[in-house]
Image 1 (tube, rainbow, N blue to C red):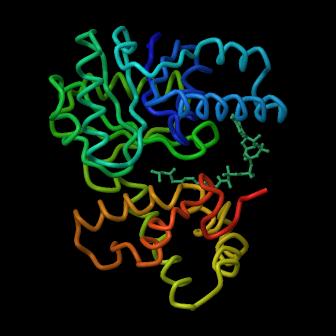
Image 2: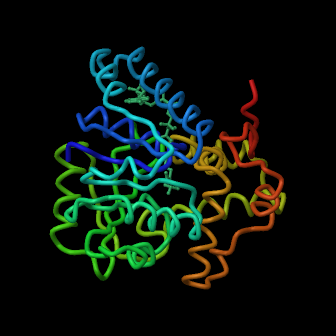
Length: 284
Ligand code: 3HC
């Protein structure tokens, strides 16, 4: 994979573009407008300079990675890509529209189309393309440059060759650990993680415990790197809500239904770190 495309340069897309470029590929990053593109570029530059300052990434590797990245607002610039990884907002309508556009522009008949969706069935995205056998789920974890896991999700129509090629790329080139999941809402990790986060929101909402005590309990008592409410702020309350809705739609179990507080905070635009306010404040 020498020519990779990444569509969407938000929290996840910027991390994916960073590691793909560091691994040596030329990356075409497509965003919806110039403003989103500038924000994405800045996020990548900040992440790389922090990694260089911490001695995690040699400076020449960071410079090479930046030189390997191209930014565009035109899907036609994906025409020569061998792999395109979609990482736009977790919204089915948006992702379906983006997949139609990617499929229309990518010319190589062997090119692979991957989605970083957290919960949308891979088959739904595959079916709006002319190449469902080349469509696969490639689910990364935030922060992408730090967390080693990738979930691979084949749909009922993904070919074994597609799965083998993406697995080899994730493990050998990106140096990630791969687990496989069936094409079910939430896949493996979010099917476990999201009900836990929703339980924490319900605990807070019912007055059972304070946000600080809930988080301290899990950090100090269970050695989690961060508590569930801080983690929800990191993931984004919009993404957490979207995954909860997908899980509830698929399984109809009450514990998967988003609690009202999560919905109200979404409606208020309190989405966590990305907006500066969630369960905690991130305004400096
Ligand atoms: N490249 C390489 N290394 C980097 C880096 C980069 N761009 N940026 C940071 N690092 C290194 C740092 O130098 C640091 O190294 P060290 O541990 O040796 O000092 C390490 O990565 C951690 O980085 P931070 O400085 O940001 O350190 P923190 O200690 O504050 O950790 C955290 C922050 C990594 C977010 C940690 O709290 C954590 O792992 N939290 C849990 C996150 C989690 O669960 N994510 C999954 C969410 S679910 C998801 O994403 C799926 C979706 O579908 C919902």
